[in-house]
Image (cartoon, rainbow, N blue to C red; front, side):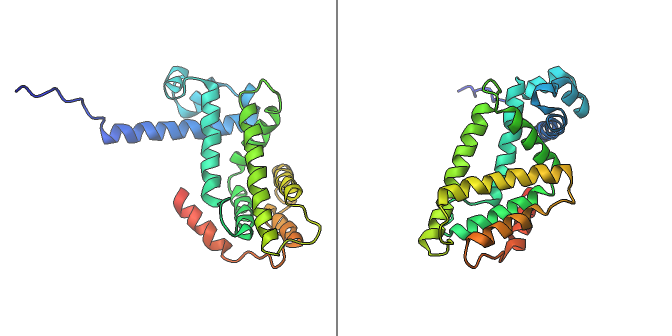
Length: 221
């Protein structure tokens, strides 16, 4: 019996090179979109920063909107590595949010991209409009559930509504990011968020926060 011709396997080195190129494109896109916004940031500029042609870039990301979505998805992956919204202990979820704020201070380009694109995306025709609308809805729900678990444990301060606390938490985090981008010396984002949680949650502390940050750094480096 004649053997079937084998399909050539992609070489490991070739795959690693392709992944490396893809990551370099994402890093450059993050910089360009953060500096110029999504609408003004050009694929040509991104390609130039990577040292490739625009056609070569389009081989990895056939549309500009696909590139933006990949950058946002990458940011979300990093955030999910830090924040467990399904943790049975709602206080631990809030501690994770403080850890995320601390981590964000180490990646200003990511924070700048998020602030710039989220502002642009309020326009209904923006390619990231549905993404941000969906993301805010999901985060509001998840943080609200964390506050509900805290209330059920008897640790939420009197008069605090879990749903409104979730909205305020997100507004505080986004507002702190803008102030910090304008003047990094104006605020410590993580400490300001922790102080807010201390006012609402009995016995809130940052136990094991440094261990969490070290684990995240090891996993994403």
